[in-house]
Image (cartoon, rainbow, N blue to C red):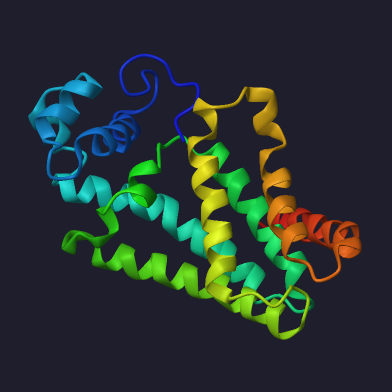
Length: 221
């Protein structure tokens, strides 16, 4: 999400990056259909013809923006889904790693997950990437339920819980201080996992194992 860049569309960055930053904001406030290349160029501080030296179309800008968020997100989900061992520590680690990446992202990704953008026919490939990400998460949830690590709840409810925590994190910078954001990934993962565990006393063990998985992922990533 957009953090410390100053000036129009992240002044000081290269033009291509500034275009992506501008688009990530404009598509949220005006929608994909309501955002013109003229408006993007004005936000960046360049002429409209100059924009087309970097991207051939508005569609190409949004496609790259989506790819920059969704491809790494899918890689994270697939990494933890394919690890051996109990599922609860892997889901904990996935939540922490995903929210850390969200907080480090320079883009405002609210338009990806809180609008109909991914349902637009222009972005069918990106929609498939998102659906594959959801499949990876569902595999871990099913594993946790089948292994009786979690209480007997519906897998869809678990998925909604994790999705809700993710959406809350997207809006967190407007609600909490920078210091509070530092602990947001771990606290969010604890809320989900502690609430789902069949035996709450196992949370500390799950957290320790999950923290190891996050550290290992960061080293190889």
